[in-house]
Image (cartoon, rainbow over all chains, first blue to last red; front, side, top):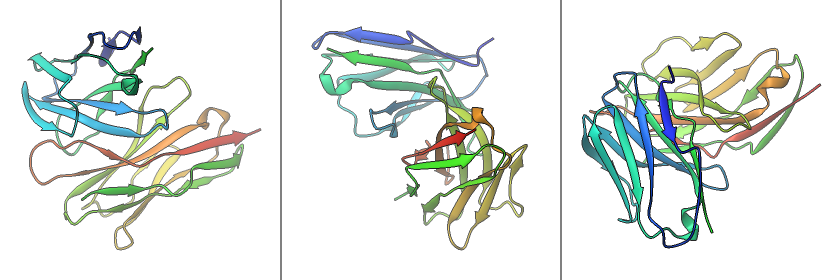
Length: 112
Length: 116
């Protein structure tokens, strides 16, 4: 009964490919997020969705497109992968501003 | 703009000793939340403790306590009786609460190593 799950856990792919990472939360939360953690361990917000609506889109290339089919799912699709996209991508969810965000286990993306 | 500063890239502590991990923040919003997360070598992000800007008392959760000094804009994490399993990266994060859900802004982290 994992709270926030992501698939796959590891993703190795060639430059130029298109790939997707899936995220699901079973906590009934209204808001979901995607964060990117670079090789120096720095975590930065990419997107935030509230009830399937995009509310935050940080300066992320438009090769990254989040999709939220329902409020329990927030998937991340990446087109034309580049070497610099190699990172760990974390999905998270929260109920409101006053409580913690619950993170998924992360997806380690390696672009060769 | 929000900013979180963790000035200690790495820290060492002897097992069973207490350790303080520093965090200062910068915000002009009166309503915000401060969080600490632990990231062990396995990679997951584990929530440790939360402090709201209007909370009168310092937050505590088991061996974790948050030394919240609002005027100094600091939110240091204190871990008492360190254990080998506490070795990990620790991230301080802040979230402003103007309206609606806002993302966490993270510091660069402190790598804690507990020595036997």
